[in-house]
Length: 601
Image (cartoon, rainbow, N blue to C red; front, side):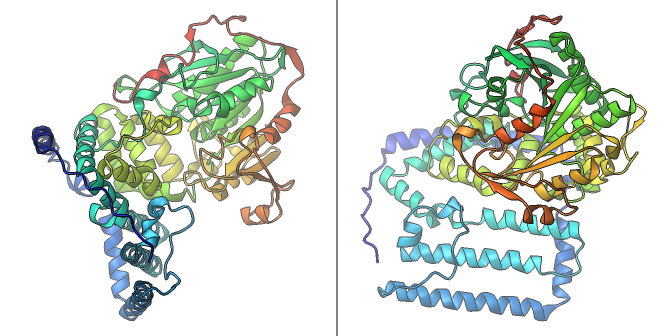
């Protein structure tokens, strides 16, 4: 048994504690009153308000299927009991000073149990292993239920995992050794500070828990984040267009236009100089333009998907031509921006508009048949409830989308902060990526409803003519523009095997690059970091499994590989262009005013 150092116990100051508790009680009462008042006002929301995620029906069906085969359930329970017997035996051996191999271990990368006492202390090791055994038993049991359709099975599995993650012993004071030690050493000050943090988050969220993930005061756009020099040279209701200052004497003749997702802000590609894709692309000789989407309010409620196409990439292409005198351009679409780019390309093909000479798609879904775990949130009941909610204000609150994405990685993006902020009583540290992640955007009601129904729910984009935009039937197979697809192997938002299907949908030549890591880190992976690696294959077989089996692995970032590919469409070299040199005058300094609008403004 490892020798444990007894913690220094600090006795709390009763005067300070009483003052803190009195202040907490006053704030808590105010929050409770506001919560009850809101519930009274919203009490006529109907049945969907009681179960907006439509979880109950899924679990009722799962339960009925499970009870139809009691022998299988008994077998599963016996298996769990046997695992517990082994755990009791190994724990007893450890308590008697003997070596014993663990019965259950956390998965690689599970940071909940990184504190040494989870392994060194026999009691906490038993708590940890008993939780892991039970968690795996629950998830395996629900996965093994036969007769459920794919959607119901996915929903049951997802929400079972949410429950399992919430019940982890690391999330509770009495079963987390690190929190217990901090409580003894600080005389409980961590819990008082944690409660204050909790109330602060509830107040910021106006009664909803809005967890602070980073020090929001540590960053300011244009000062220490989104700092690549550029200017706003065009704007309309939906977007501002930024043109970046060149850093080379010669640049590619064809400019580079980037279409980010409107569900997030563009500066994910320009966090800091050392990891800025925009800065790097400028240094590689691209004249870079980026769309900065508006953070919409009720005035833009009627803006449609068509409007986003017309006032987004199409308006931007016209503005780029005025700014540079160059009609043609290379274009990148990131995530939803890539889906919009695909639709725009089909529209332009029908209009015989050939201004886009190459199209790059970062982690982009075109076939939504297997949309990953985001599909859990898309069914008729949930969409109807969402549309009813959006109709009240004309838009979807930015925090609603942020919560959805955080649930996909609950241990990292929810529970780790519950422990740090509320149990340990610590303030989150400054982190540019988490600042961006918390800087959410709203969604116009008309556009968001169209996107969710036509893409995620009905998967119409893969059908020729399944979607019509401004009188044009969208048909991806007629797109002949050369394409490059960048996907990431651990993507939980746009699963790479789902994005790969675009190689079979697009009508032109396609290069597919699979990067390591996930939806963000796999894309924002500068060469200097020398991380993750990527895979390439000269052929695009029908199945993603065949593609990866024949792919070659490369070390480092995929950025230079992409730059080599897009170099074929550069159009040669011309003297560098500066914002304001062309027919468009500078409107304001980058990163512009649109990106600075907060979702709660």
